[in-house]
Amino acid sequence: MINVTKPFLPDMEEYFEYLRGVWDRCWLTNNGPLVNDLELKLKEHLGVDHMLFMSNGTVALQIAIKALELKGEIITTPFSYIATTSSILWEGCEAVFVDMDRETLNINPALIEAAITEKTTAIMATHIFGNPCDIAAIDKIAKKHNLKVIYDAAHCFGSKYMGKSVFDYGDISTTSFHATKLFHTVEGGAVFTRQPELLKKMAYQRNFGHESMDTFACVGINGRNSEFHAAMGLVNLKSINEILASRKTQAALYNESLKGLRVTRQKLNANAEWNYSYYPIIFETEEQLLKSIKVLNDNLIYPRRYFYPSLSTLDFVTKKDTPVCNDVCRRIVCLPMNHSLKPEDIQFISRILLRVQNN
Ligand SMILES: *Cc1c(COP(=O)(O)O)cnc(C)c1O
Image (cartoon, rainbow, N blue to C red):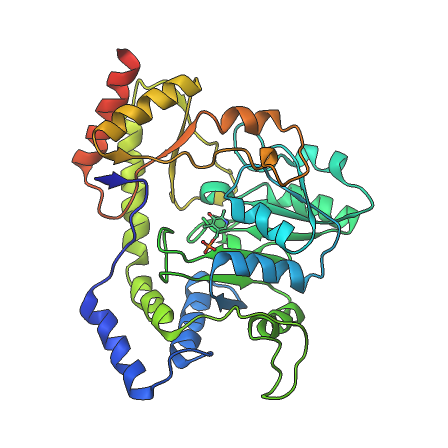
């Protein structure tokens, strides 16, 4: 069976080495030494000044919204994982959808200004599949209208924009270290900011607002993560270059062996370095997509319709017509991609897709 993603598992002995230390210290969670070490190593690896390791990518988004004290309307993309929208709603704000760009699959900056009202407080955009948004355009609009910017960078480990980690942009960037993501800590996530005051606030918010044992700086939540999760991150980080390199090779092989397949691909940001975190293809019709998925499934291959349906069509949102997203999300699928996928697998998948098309 081949799934769209497969968690990376490191050398078990190396993981156990870290656990020995946990047993010695009997310090399991609450900002332990491994959490601190992971934060240090990630900051160094990514070249960013500030980050906080969190329990998951969704809490990271929620804390980002809280820390910026956002109210009212948040402009966002209909093409993302549901957590982008649900965290806005969970924080009592309204998600205002702005359609995506047909080529980059990210929010279309040219449509943002028309959606701004006096209730708008922020833009929350996703760098979809690790391909950075038009950050320059979004930041310019935000500045002009005095809006905050949050980037959901859940797919972005290893992606760069203008030579820097894409996590370094926006008022706050968030990411996910969930097991299926390119770099993971089993469950986990993070917030990034360049503003020390915001960092301090989010550090309190991550830990119930505790300032000391008996004093509280603000309303907080439990957003912390454990030593066990940090240990997984510390071991996995040693393999990150290998993981990134294997994706790049696999993408090149897919490109090669899918020649002749009538699909289009995401247009990559020219100012960015992509991390090859997913391999999305866009079919000409939904019928073609469904037929292809069916035959792949018959062969125990499970690609996934990332992301379907359009978030702007959910029952619990303020509906908005987003024709580009509604159209593209019916025709897009992510093919399997993971560190252990073999060239034969990619060739097999490609042959099936070509056969379905040419039948
Ligand atoms: C995975 C993901 C999240 C949620 O992260 P969790 O760690 O699973 O909570 C949020 N946004 C996007 C775009 C994602 O892909």
